[in-house]
Image (cartoon, rainbow, N blue to C red; front, top):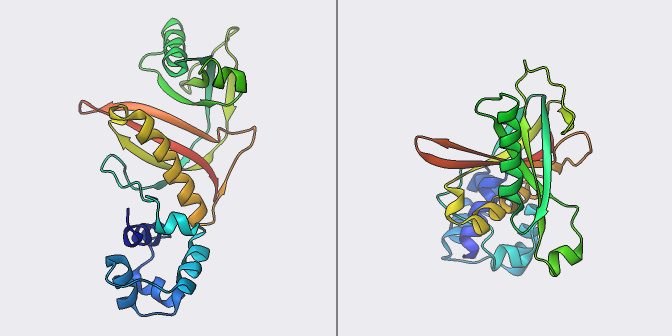
Length: 231
């Protein structure tokens, strides 16, 4: 990844900023910003530092890393307001917790007569270093979103309610073609958006701070990744 591509990515991520707007912030001409992005010219060190400060990134990120994580698998980042809902969850700590947790929740939904259940999931953080380092285990929680008209008395799983909440979201096309690359990078891209735009990642006990939702459309699999924000 090049400096010019990183700069262009950060500029567009920052509220869709134009070259003219960035040029005004940096005290240079639009043509100068264009040359930076095309890499026909490079900024002086003082301007590099100023760019890093403006975009809340490190010099390594701007100059050396692939911070755009460009891939046709990703959609543009968007803001969504998720309306209040109820759900039940089940967490697993194992070598393959995602499949175990999702299968358990789907079986639970079938047992309660919920047709085409809406399943979401997220990493379950309560794992010891011994489980991670020695046994190569990690945790995952899966949840079934309950239909609004369903009256449920459930003894085996707790029913949890969440209020309306705004999230930033990104969609991954065919996420399991390269799950250990595409899914973590989706979270990194969302967190970079949070940092660049000065948004606060919301983490409270009352809401899900992040989650994933898998689905199929026209025979293609997709995953939406959500991170809660204060907006």
